[in-house]
Structures are given as C-alpha cells and as structure tokens.
Image (cartoon, rainbow, N blue to C red; front, side):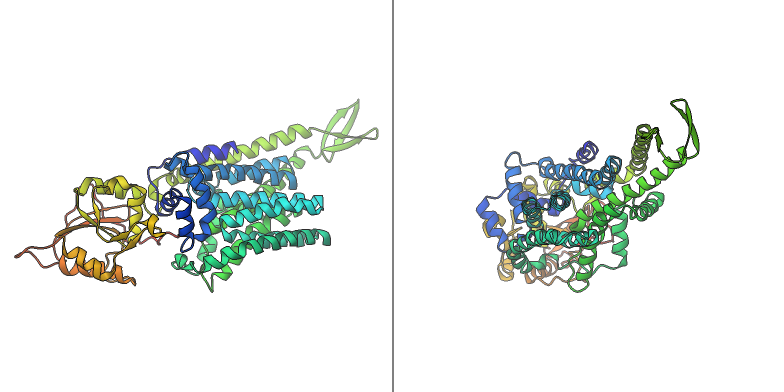
Amino acid sequence: MAAMLGIGLWGLDRGGMWGDESVTFQVARRTVPQIWRLLHDVDAVHGLYYLFMHAVLAVHPGEVVLRLPSVCAATVTAGLVAALGVRLVGPRIGLWAGLLYAITPMTGHYAQEGRSYALVAAGVAGATLLLLRAVDAATARAWWPYGTVVALTCLLHELAVLVLCAHAVTLALTRVPRRVWSGWGCAAAAVVLLLLPLVWVSQGQAGQVAWLAPPGWDRVERLARNFSPGPDGAVFWGSLLLMALGLRERRLAAVALPLLLVPPGILMTVSQVRPLYHDRYVLYALAGGSLLVAAGAGRVAGALGRMRFAGRQVRIAGRRVRIGRRRVRIGGRRVRIGGRRVHALLGVTGVLALTVTFLHHLPVHRQDRSAAQRPDNLAVVSALAVRQMRPGDPVLFVPSVGRLAALAYPKGFQRVRDIALRESAPRSGTLWGREATPGELRQRLASVDRVWVVAERDALDPRRPPSDPVERTKLAVLAEEFTVREEHARDGVTLRLYVRPSAGDVSPGTATTARLPESRPASPTARPRPARW
C-alpha cells in the first residue's frame, strides 16, 4: 500500500485536466439539485460518483483534490489484492501480488485520474475478499457485507455488475455446497434489482458512448499488455508464463482466473453487437492477473528452494540427516530446516525483482505523468485564450463540447463573449450548456466582424461535415462570411481568429494562416472523442 500511495502521489499535479476529468470537476461543483437534474438527461451512470465528489471538492476545489480519491482507492486496492493472496496461498504471494498491482502502469494511470474507475476496482477487490469470507462463514449474515459492497460498486459504475458472473464461476469451480449458492444468489439478486432503475435510465443515454467500436483481437492484445507490469519485452512474456504456472495453485486460480477473464470476455462479446467495451471499464479485472503472476512466481520460488536443500546433509542432535525436503522427522518430531530463512530470502528476492521491473519501465510511468498523455489538455486551451483574445472578443466553440475548457478554466475566457451560448450548463442541466438555434446563430454572427474559434483537431475539416445542424451552421457561416487571420495549434486543439473581409480583400476562407512561433501543427493522427462514461 505504501508503494501504491507513493506511485499515485508522484506527479499528481500534472498541470491540466482533460475532458472527462473536467466534467467531474465542473459537475461536482454544482449544487445537489443541479446534479440531480443533470442525471435525468445525461451521465446517470456516474451519479453516485458525482455526489461523492461534490462532498470532496467542497473541502477544496482543485486538481490535486480531484484526483486524491482515486489515489486512495488504488492504495486500498493494492492492500486488498495482497490480502487475497495471503488468504488464498500465503504471505509471500500476497506481498508479491500487492506489489505487482501497484507497479503496473495501467494502475498508476487510473490512480491519477479524476474518474470513478479506481474506486470501482477497490470495490470489486473488497467484494471478492468478502466473498471468500462469506463462503468460509457459511451463514446468511455473512452475505450482507458482500451484497452491500457489490451494490455500492455497481452504483459507481454499472458495468461492475459483471463481477457477479466472475464470482459465480468461482463458486462453481470450488464446488461450494447448496447453502452457499443460496446465500450468494440472494445477495446477487438484491444487487441486480437495485441496479435495474439505473440501467433503465442509462440505456436512454447510451448515445454518450456511440463513438465506441466493436473490439477486435488487437484490443485483446492491448488489454493483455495493459494488465502486465511491463507492456513489452521479457517482462510481458515472463508475466504470461508465470500466469500459466499460477494456474497450478488451484484455490487461487479459481478466484483470480474468472476475475481476469470473465468481465472482459463478456463485455467484448456483447460489444460485437452493441459496442460498450473500453479498457477502463474492466480495470478491476487487473487484480486477477496480479494474483496469478504472483502465484506463478511462488511456484518457481518453491522449486528453487527445494533444489537448494535437496540432497544436503546436516547434523541434528549428533545425528547426520540427509534432507530430501525442508521438513524431516527426528525422534518422532517434525523439524523444519532453514524454513524462515528460506522464506525471507525468497520474499526479499521477489521484492527486488519487482523493484528492478519497476525501474526498467520507469520511462513509461514518467511519460504517463505528463498532461500530453491524456486526450486533451484544457489548461493549455485556457492559456492560449489568455494570451491571444482581447476583452469583449466573441468566441465560438466547435464542437460545443470544447466549452469544457471554459468551464474548467474560466480565467482564460472571463473577458470574452460566448456568442453561441443560450443557457449555461448548470442552469440548463447539461454538461456544456445549450446553444442558440441555427437561425439565432446566424443573426449573432452577422453582428460581429471578428470571432475566435476554439476547435478540436478535425472539427474544421470540410470533408467531415458534422451531423448536428448547429455545428453545420457554424462551419457554413465561417466559410461563407469570414476568412482566417491567425491560427495557433497546441495539443490537439486549434485556436483560430476569423475576420470578416472588407472590400478588396480576398474571398472568405482563402486567407493565409499566420502562426506564432510557439505554435505547432496538430498531429495528423486523430484521437477518439473522450467517453462520458
């Protein structure tokens, strides 16, 4: 847990929020009635998380505080994974499993993101530990904590309900008695019934993830690499080999393997018909991979320990004894030869190996702590606006989701006028406000001679016309009545100054684009629109 806490806090203030984080930030700072109104139309799947973050940001509204709950959740998850390893095999496997979880780059990525996925992973790990305790207790009362934790986790993100399928496979593999099935079935049924209203509402908001595509084998490979403590090279292939060896620890494998495979497998299969899959939605399955790798490493360590002592002769009570195993019988008593030292040596060796693995992939971790590794950096957009826009300048966001920059960092836009906005986001119960109709927008643009446009990377491409009529109107008016005077591109966002040409000027849309020295062209590779789930 200390290792995970250190990794989570390292570089936590990376200097800018990206789109989905800014949604958390601005929604959580609304009043509770405003949040409740929003959830009726959008983002119901994150409702409980927004209410939780509303209480957190009431302490201090800042980027670091926004991410601290995820850091704490990842820290707890590392401890829970270790506890699972201890319960299923022993302390050494638990230590290694917890450290494996902590040093995996994917864990560190979502530990530093102001979204719900690290909290969901903590809930699933806790529910899995409570499942084992309920099975051992074999009482009806023992299932109440399990059902409560699973229900809260699913309310944080409804796709966590797939962990119930993984737990069902675990119970089948361990061949539990009928009374255990009865207790688990009641708890699972209560969770599903509680979740049904959220599922019903969120299905009407599924357009938020319409950008997702059916996953192919490349996504399977990508997930496997993300779940490894090293995404490539000997560490990745070694992890796969150790996972295979870890299957020989049958009790652990019965818990870890379904957790690792069942939720991603079901979600990928369903997504062939209705795309819902993204790696972050199954982050909680990573715990199964860490447990299997640790169990495989334990198998290797055990074999090495037996080779170290097999065939040795030692003197005990004046007798020479040949050791075939670490336990021998002397005078009717079983005596352990060098057990503690061997376990300590193997445990420390494993920790050192994990430390070397972490240091080897340190560039991956360091790179992930840059704001440039996220889909967009809204702080950069605001900084550009401060430098380039004059007080009273009209600004147009293309598409309207670009207004998130102004909502997250209002300082850069407080002197300008949002010419398309009709009703603010909090008052309208939307994520980024309601805009004027196409007719109203044309009238507003007709009254100005210059307008700044904040656009996503490919939003101004005339070869890819948007489906929304308001967005089409924006592009049409800009092309028909304005020409480009300046352009500044940073981190996938374009800031353009459009001016209305006077008599004798070139025709609209054909003026030469000017760039400041610090500007750089956007990459030709488009990034997908960030998900609101």
